[in-house]
Image (cartoon, rainbow, N blue to C red):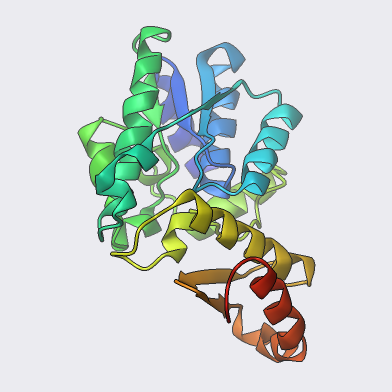
Length: 246
């Protein structure tokens, strides 16, 4: 109850919200709360149909917005045109978020004085996240952080509010599967997405496929490793069909 009161007070100051929305539990909760406290006419969830976002995540975000009658705008961002992004330096996320917030800033012309919000929570502050620097540059606000919610609290609140994504596994952008210093290309991102879809289809809902040139490195939770070994040959055939050599 105390947390809800803090959030309500926080949104009392907000004239309107443009929510950087990904379909993950953090940004979904922020979008839901913005609509709850501000009303449908003072909130817009904004998601980028970026090549680094899984198509399944994009569709899931659309379904979430539809189910809660949440106003949604799908935008196109051009981070793939920026050599500071596709050359894949260690601060790649800064350029991605910079492009996102810059593009979202254009919406201020349509929604004067509205704030840009993101789903950063307290636990994120302890990680290396160059994207937080971009958020600061564009004066993006973080209600979950300001109201002291960590990841566990976010999931508990999302579950209490019956948000279907409350237990959704983390789904970092596809570019995070490419080692720093190796070029980010649309072809690599589609390979990774297709490979992870193959793993999901075999029952590995939580998985990562790291792109190392012609080599794919598959990661699953420790408790799923024995199951992975049993279908190793099948997975190898599917990944080779996608263009990996091993």
